[in-house]
Amino acid sequence: MALIVKKFGGSSVANAERVFNVANRIIDDYKKGNDVVVVVSAQGDTTDDLIEKAKEINPQGASKREMDMLLSAGEQMSIALLAMAIEKLGCPVISLLGWQAGFHTDSHHGIARIKNVNTERIKNEIAKRNIVIVAGFQGLNKYDDITTLGRGGSDTSAVAIAAAMKADLCQIYTDVDGVYSADPRKVSNAVKMDEIGYDEMLELATLGAQVLNNRSVEMAKKYNVELEVLSSLEYKPGTIVKETVKMEKTLIRGVAKDNNVACISIVALEDTPGIAFKIFNKLAQYKVNVDIILQSVGRDGTKDITFTVSQDQSQLAVDAIESLKGSLNYKNIKVDTSVTKVSIVGAGMESHPGVASKMFEALYDAAINIQMISTSEIKISVLIDSKYADKAVSVVHDAFLG
Ligand code: ADP
Ligand code: ASP
Ligand code: MG
Image (cartoon, rainbow, N blue to C red; front, side, top):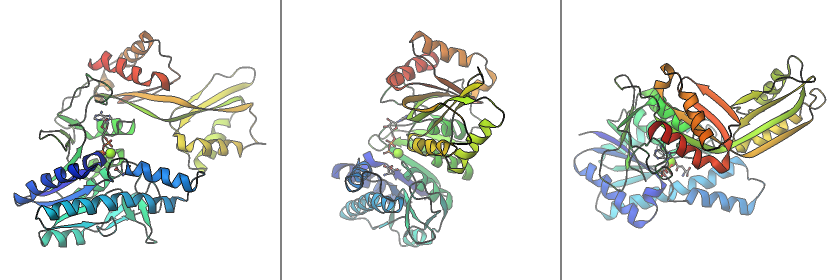
């Protein structure tokens, strides 16, 4: 007998047939005598559809509090439907919203962080031998307002429950059968991994491999929760995400891309000491998360500073720089949203020279221009024109893993 946490993503519960498929998988484990806690996302494209509905009412953007109120409804629907299916199949079940399941978060609507999960209610329901179905992606802040955890946040809900309840298994079911060396829907020769370490998985998720939400990996690492990513439609082993201790360090583990990037250039800045401090201090005050930074060599007393942010923060970044008018001399600001960040990840690159050059050669052979480069111990990212994004992922993948 084990305590199993299972999470099913939107496509796994997209219609009635899929809901029954998931219900049956849950019941299989339950009937073996296990305790089963299930986290579900909103069905199919429900979350996107709700965002569109909000835009119909207020194209400028509704308040974040009301957006959370709206978006959390998607998961409310799916937990009730899944519970109804399990009920129909004759097993005891109860659905719980995030707050009923004890999810307490901070107050950053739209991207709230889980502070703690009070698992008392879940434990009581399990003691009654109920299958417990929990709404992913949502919680309650200290003002008793509904919050959401950011897109893809149901993965984090599942890991949080697994950590809080010290579950024996945490299974993340999705529409592919594991974690691959690149998005298997885009790269036909992508390779499925049997295992991957937390650090490499965290980089891949952060750099755009949406199969796991990056915060869920961060949390899994922090609380040492071993995850399995597997298919909700096929019965076969998936990919285990765990601490790397015994794992062989491969040179390159995977390739990921992120389209949600805006590149901002401040052109012809005065070339004097303290300029970078002034700009990035102001961006920090505006709570803009800056990713890659590039400064040109000074010429004729001026220089350019270019940096990247997520697209939803690009206007905020421009506002921050414009607020410095009067104390900062520059010609103009350029914003480019038609850029994509393509990255390679691998713990083995630390000790292998020549990895960057191999990546750049693959891009050069495909005549793809690199606009910016950034590196860390286990990743190399380049910024390129979005129209070459899929091609870039494919040629870089071929160079290392083809
Ligand atoms: P869910 O709704 O189950 O949470 P997501 O759509 O969030 O599913 O994530 C699964 C998708 O992630 C897959 O359909 C796949 O296209 C994409 N994906 C991107 N990179 C990878 C990767 N490296 N390995 C596996 N899937 C990936
Ligand atoms: N339904 C939410 C989303 O679409 C949360 C999730 O799927 O994990 O982002
Ligand atoms: Mg997801």
